[in-house]
Length: 240
Image 1 (cartoon, rainbow, N blue to C red):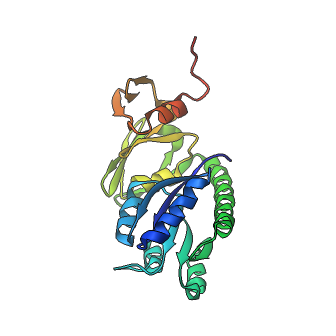
Image 2 (tube, rainbow, N blue to C red; image 1 turned 90 degrees about the horizontal axis):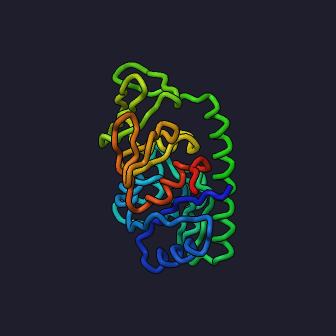
Image 3 (cartoon, one colour; image 1 turned 180 degrees about the vertical axis):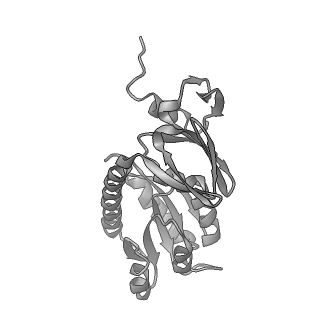
C-alpha cells in the first residue's frame, strides 16, 4: 500500500521535537500534519484532522502523555518518545506500537515507523473486509439507524454533531466528522474540506472549486484541491 500515514508530533521539548520532525520528513510514507507542544493542542488537532500516527512524549505540562492517551476514545497508532525508559511497561499497557528512548537514533526510529506502517496496512485490509457489509449503524436521538454507504450523499460537520444526508432522509448523530472519516471506506468517500465528506459516486459535476451533489454546492479545500479532484475523477476522466 502506498498511502501515506498522516502524522503528528506531541512534545514540549523543542530539541527533541525538531529531531523527530526531521526524521519524519525523511520517510516517504509519512506525511507531517502538525506539531504540538502539549496534549491540549494535540487534542484539538486530533479533532480537526485525520491522524494515523502520533509521536507522543510522556512528561508534559498540564497532562501527561499517557493520561492523554488514556482519555482518547479513538486513538491513532502511537509511538511514545521519552527520556525515561521506566515508563515502557505502562505505555505498552496503553497499546502503543513502540517506545523510543531519547535521544532517538535514526535506525531505531526507522524500525518503529516500519512497524507502524505494517500495522496500518494490516488494519486497512481488515477495514476493507469489514466494509464489504456496506453499511454502518448510527444513533439518532434514542433510535439506532442502519445507513447504507450507497445511500449517503454527503456528511456535514455540525460541531459535536454531524448531519448525514442520504438519498431519502437526513440523520443527525452525536459524532465528529473524524469519527465517520475513520470508519467510512476511503474508496467510496473523500473529505473535500474541514466540514464535509462526500460520496465520490454521488458527485454529479465539478464546477471550478465546488463539487455538486444533489443540487448542493460544496466548496473544495484550496490546499488539497488538485489531489481531491484527481481522486474524485479517478480513471474515468476522458480528455483529448
